[in-house]
Image (tube, rainbow, N blue to C red; front, side):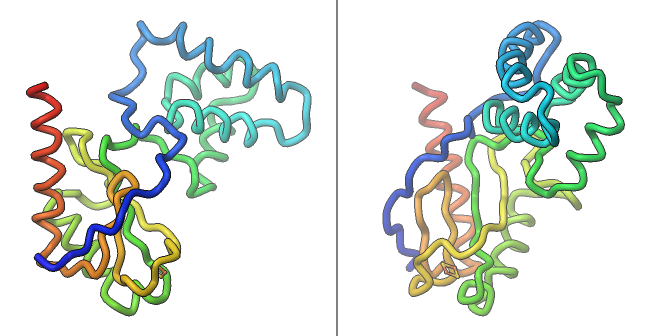
Length: 188
Ligand code: FES
């Protein structure tokens, strides 16, 4: 495989490894997260979107339990909250995958086959229509804008680790590499 691993980008600030959905037993932890956020933005114009931003930054996505709690805390209809969440692409309704595969779709990468890389990834990871996280929660596929290393197009990153000049045939090996890494983590 001729793919180049060219380094590691800064670690994402959001909790990319967050696991699973928020259960009822975690609801008090959720309230602990929400209380200071709501207190910070309460009464300010356009606060719902700022609160959702802060929530997603803290938790990695907008859990349904959090939307329900927010509805109660802000006295805003749940439908209004979902209207905002679904209007902006930025907001995520499902927990992030442990390994986030970000495929650059900037001009250089696009022209050098990024769409085919994405198709292959979705096939290899068995991602159904509209899904971006694998059923086991291990992988997440995202499209991102220019990563600033166009000379290596097409480029993808996995949790910040950069792979350049990726070919469709490289995709299974890249995925397998992280599956093996995960198996090593599980074995301890
Ligand atoms: S367009 Fe992909 S790295 Fe610049």
